Figure 1 (cartoon, one colour):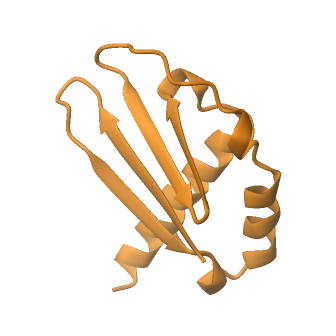
Figure 2 (tube, rainbow, N blue to C red; figure 1 turned 30 degrees about the vertical axis):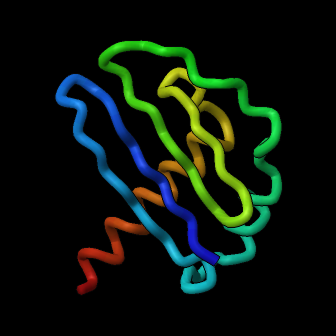
Amino acid sequence: MKVFVHRSGGFAGLGRTWEVRVDEQPDASDWIDLLDGLPWDDVAPPPRDADRYTYRIRCAPHEATLAETQLTGAWRELVDRVQDAAGQARQSR
């Protein structure tokens, strides 16, 4: 299972993507619990806000798009974990 986080927008409008294979993580069951607990179907459309980031989070069959201001609680935890794990994977290469 893969988790993708794509961040777009911001002042320069540049995009960045992080990817993690959950089954390769030492705490895969914690990842699965986090992903299963997210309110995938209850995400309000992101408000349009210039110079702010928008996050597209995908873990098939789910996908959600959140504004930076909506990235709280479990959503913030997921994005932080994906960014950390993807950064560690790059360092080990």
